[in-house]
Image 1 (cartoon, rainbow, N blue to C red):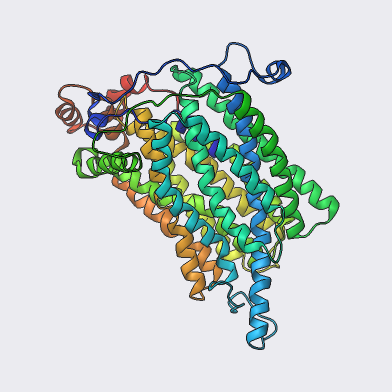
Image 2 (cartoon, rainbow, N blue to C red):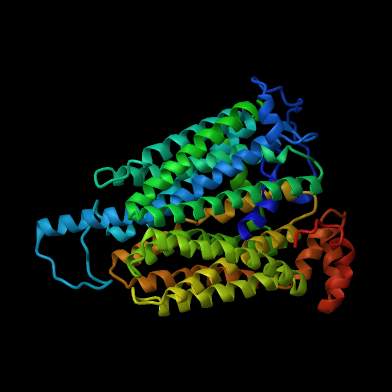
Length: 544
């Protein structure tokens, strides 16, 4: 799927090499802060032979097995959250309705614009998007700190291990979601999201050290993401079957999902982090005149400032601005669509599960389509075309999905198209980025790519919440995602000619890079530019 394909590229990252932003882009490295990295220490507890026989492949790092198991458990964490959302919305709505009854009489036969009361100062339909707002804001603030701990201290394994333990405990606590505990569970969802990002920092660091060979690294990560996708799909299918057989309501389905996630996480996370991950030393020292907390922020801010103040890197600058908006919108799509399907279309968690199954399945041909279009017309035009399809589908969904009487197949068709677009856009963005960044700095600048994609992820749910609190139709709230897709589209247009951007990145390491790039492109046609840089492009990884 799109997310899997993205991660194949993204995970070849994440730890910065301790060099200045100027050196990032110029290709030099004069850092004196990098520590020599000794070989991994042996595991404190040897894995049982039965685990080695069934889980560990010969001639592969021990951590590769741990990461495979970890990917399976992460799939359960992600999918269990999907089924918790409808239950929280139902419980919040009941709490708000009870509050309204206590305060005044309520008219019968409300429509979607009726004020159904407030709970904790908000409309119940704003709950999931408010969770998204706070989750993303706290993650943005803490991600540089997590990265600095993993990078500058020997506590990488501790970060991964204890975040896994806490994630498992949260899943266990969320089993008890009810009328009296729903708000606490909502708060735990925010903590869950932040801990999940801390966990990924440690996971990505281990992943980046599996191999220095790009082909092997790509193979490893494709397997990990394949396992993650299979885990989510199995979880989704089993839960749909159980909820159908047991005839559970939204709350019962949520409890089953959290129980499944708790059992999976405690078992699989426990095995992987106890037996298949070794301690790692600090990769580099904390810079002089800085602190552990400040070092991550200083590196990101100085890198951002250099890129955005340097006119030579306009293509990279506009691309990062584009993904801040469009990736933020795609990240909010699951939260906003869950709210919309539950409140406007009155779908239960079982039906919502089927809708997201359509998204998952459609992501497979979407990823293939994105690869084909990217190779045929180049990744920049492919991303522009995908955003057009995304906006059209979202607009039509807001127009035609406006009542519970909407046909199920219409809903599933729109969900499938969202899946196609997600499978198309994410790998296309990653491929485009990898071809316009300077050669030799791919791994360092990938960290910037991830942070940029998450930087404004709180804004689309905030916009939706604002409209909802003002009493606007929820159809308008759903269509508001197009504001961010359109913004991403405009910034992509500002990049200009794709082959100009690729060519400039390819020659950046030359002594007279800028003059060479400019002189070669003056007065040339697009197909001539393509031929000019073809020799350089063919040496890039086959990421499209």
